Length: 91
Image (cartoon, rainbow, N blue to C red; front, side, top):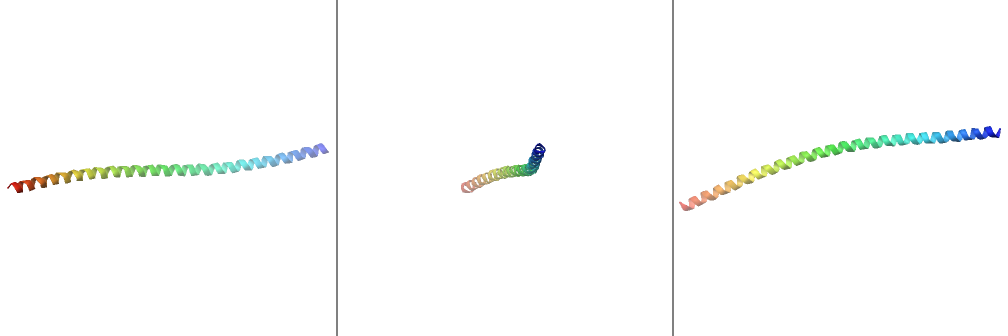
């Protein structure tokens, strides 16, 4: 009788341990799912940010080209004004 009671107690204890372990597995799986979701969202945000950086870099490059073109035009016009001013002084 005592042996049977001991076996029953061991089985009952084993079942509790198994139930706790199964719950822990379930909790860890849920945590993993959450982390994977956060990781995917972070990757999306990184891709979006990288795309925005590329767009801004392109805009900066375009603005620089436009600035250089305008500066070149200003230089040419100043040179032309200087030449015309000299011609007027010489006339």
